[in-house]
Length: 338
Figure 1: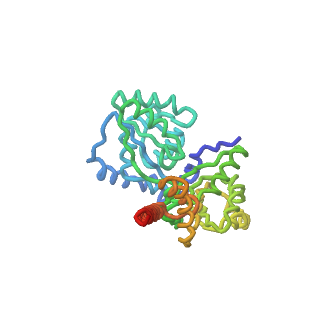
Figure 2: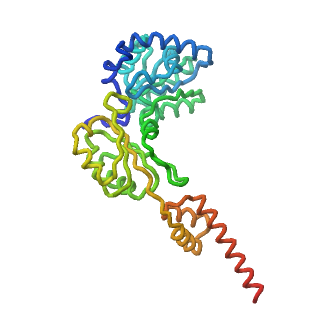
Figure 3: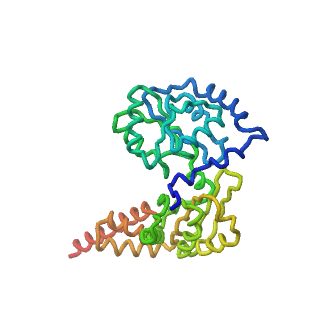
């Protein structure tokens, strides 16, 4: 079975040799970047006995931050998902690390390797952790490592940077409906039964949805999402790389759009299901809310009405309070009349 670990979405090693800045190999171009990193970041405080969680580029190496470059250079130990991959990235940046300074921490050994990291931190070392690409701990290894370090009451310092998830969101035009926001599902299960159950959950979710998918399963996912009808879906593939593509199609047309050009199914995907359109018929929303108020407490009625109608919860809550006040006033008037 192929390796379907979530970090595959962020992997960019095959692209590193091809990327250049104005025709100059990045290894040469980054000499000035390293100097800029020292000037910009060296005056800041980088305490010992600290785990630095460092985000790295998802495809375009020029997206590395000056602070990340400085910490990668400064660290006593560099924990990483794949030592060979990370060593290649470091060489491109002009950073030299001895093999003894690299420590493999990936999804298959994270619990055990975390203890080795804790031991080095307890010796006063600065340890940086990078996944193969992107932000560690977000559909990538790193969360168990951070939990172990925190459990040992040691410091964790995040260095923010590239993420395929936020990159795709920023270019999708996905507008939250009301106050509902969006939910992150990540990769769906690979087993057919569990996958079908997850797809059914997607069909019942009115909020925006963020998914990750591998190229060999993107057509299957597109067919499953067809039941969402006209609901827009954005596919973002090969983000920050040479063949980056971001396109939005109605859910029922997604499979045909992919089939029209075989190149469209290549690369790793962020899939953004836009929120369901909220009904503008407030009369129906209020009718549902009124019926629920007759049966359940106010907060429960508001929560259920929001789920049924897709209307903003704050608006429904204010309407529910008004309904209760009106009902209370009517009850008092009836009592006085009697």
